Amino acid sequence: MFDLARWPLETVHAARAALPEATVNDFGLAVIAGAMRSYLREHDELDGSSVVVGVPMSLVPLASRWTSKDEVSNQFGMILVDLQADEPDPIVRFAGIVAGTMHGKRRSRNSLVLAATTALDDYPWWAAKRVLASTRRAVKKGKRIAANALVTNVPRGSADVQLCGRSGVSAFGVVSADSGTAFAVASLGTELTISFTASRAAVPGSHRFRELLEASFTELVEALGGLKASRSDLVK
Image (cartoon, rainbow, N blue to C red):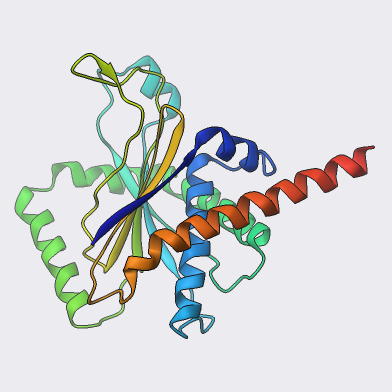
């Protein structure tokens, strides 16, 4: 199944400012984490085990993406992020996710890791196809895999995205749910969207996930708003 949730990007920027080092994608991960926590609680599966997501990350430095747009390739690595689903406090959960993504980015941009990852550019198509087939077989057999879900993100660029002469106002992604469920975080125009694809067999009750995402968003925004307010009182 497929569905998506949408929110004003202005609200996201105002909320995430409570943790200056956090990105919009970190905020999206925190919203997904809250929804995953609620889903697991509803199904009596919140047992303290880690909920880990695989997050594709560009290996091209941000400066290069702007100064050499025609030369940079679509090089990316994969970092694993613990969603801290066993943590009841949304702010502590958010901070843990931010720390996890920062660690993953530092590690992935290590020169040795970078060399090993970009070497995959030369792999033949049939090798990639075999890896995907192996992953699908592992999921079907119930074997342990590195990540419980995939979360991909499409960062907002400065260019005006147009279709047939009209500017885009919203964007969303559709990601293959080989591991059972997958999410896409996207921002365009004035909106942030989180879309998800889920296998009904692997994720029973996934039809409720949009409601859980919306509830998680509200909880996180209100908690971060309270944090900013308490800091302002301390300054006064």
